[in-house]
Image 1 (cartoon, rainbow, N blue to C red):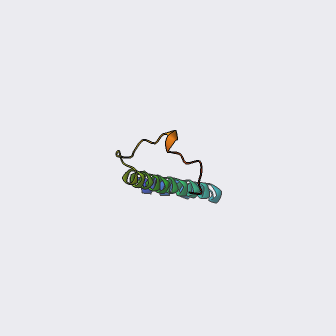
Image 2 (spheres, rainbow, N blue to C red):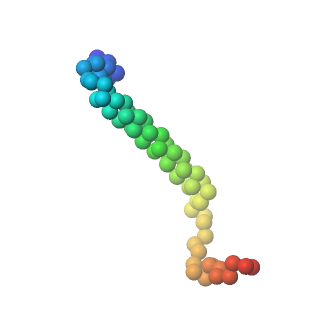
Image 3 (cartoon, rainbow, N blue to C red):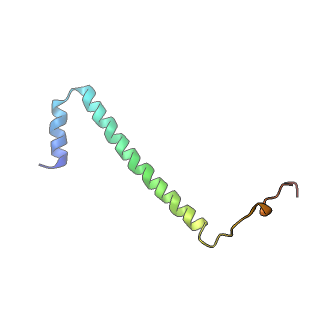
Length: 68
């Protein structure tokens, strides 16, 4: 029996409100996977933009007068 079939059998025995909870949990799991994919994408883009050759900045590099 596949996982899909086993879940289907369990769902058939559950009342509607419990089935809705299973659906919401499945949607949450899908959302988590999607969110992790976006985080990984963001990290990779950040790594491309700011690589190991970035200069080290000190407090002397901070401008206090922003008008110039």
